[in-house]
Length: 96
Image (cartoon, rainbow, N blue to C red; front, side, top):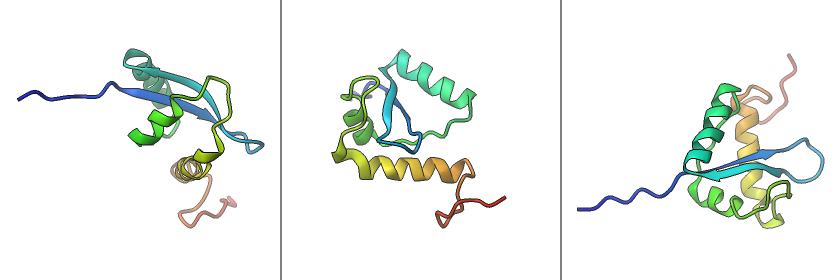
């Protein structure tokens, strides 16, 4: 029996609240590992969605994500805000 492991792919996004999120880093295998390592080192939340990362990996570095991916990426951003403590589990901004 042969096992198939797809190549690891990672994409980093930046979202400043103005405009659409942009692709700031992307890569496969060793580059993907480095992106993930840096994200962990800087406490940047990680979100795993192979289908979405495959689509995002086709976006050029520095480009905004396509409109067709807005909803999926909005879910990723909401997840990142929640796990980083920027919003409550109900999606409301923290007022600490």
